[in-house]
Amino acid sequence: MVTEPATPLDVAARERRYRLVWVGLILALLTGQILLMAAMVYLATSDASFAIEPDYYQKGLHWDATAAQTRQNQRLGWSATIELGTEIRGTGERTLICILRDRAGQPLDGATVDAVVFSHTRGNDRATVTLLPAGSGRYEAPVRFARAGVWEFRLAIQRGPDTFTYVEQRDVYPPDREP
Image (tube, rainbow, N blue to C red; front, side, top):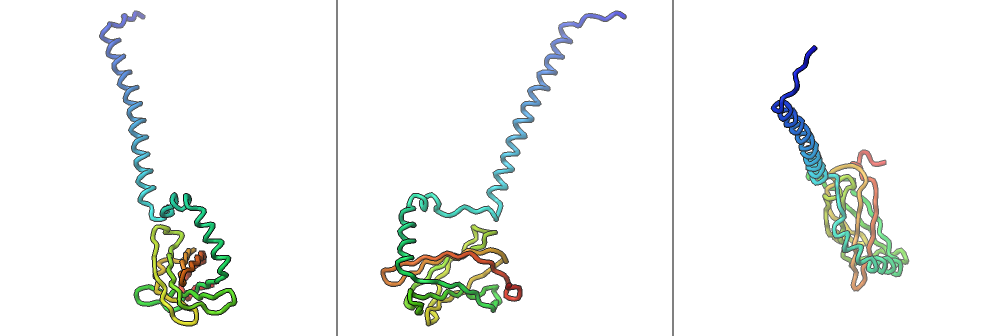
């Protein structure tokens, strides 16, 4: 069998083809990586269950203030109890009830109670309410609990010059499914 030697034109065409294949492969891999990262960024920023604690960096910088507030809470000796009303309004709201007591167990009246309430499954959907006094250390406000699950309640209670903070996590279910 006789083979003809390759002409320089055939060698150059083959080289060009291999170059295009390798450059194309590298470009395809880089483009795939860019598209994958763009998809990941989109998923990370559009996921409603993804949440970042607001002002977390500032809270970290002011850790001493948080520790001082913890000592203030212990010094005051106040207690807070959170309850949820059993009636659901037409707007889907239930009554958030906070019962405040002093160190001796007596009702604590004359306070301003601000609450931040959110579900752990949607940590960016936070409700901020001011609970209104209802007498005998009881404070109330309507809050919409859109979903069942673990909810966090963060209270800031101001009475005169004193500030008391309280955080509670609890399961919230519709009244007919409460455990």
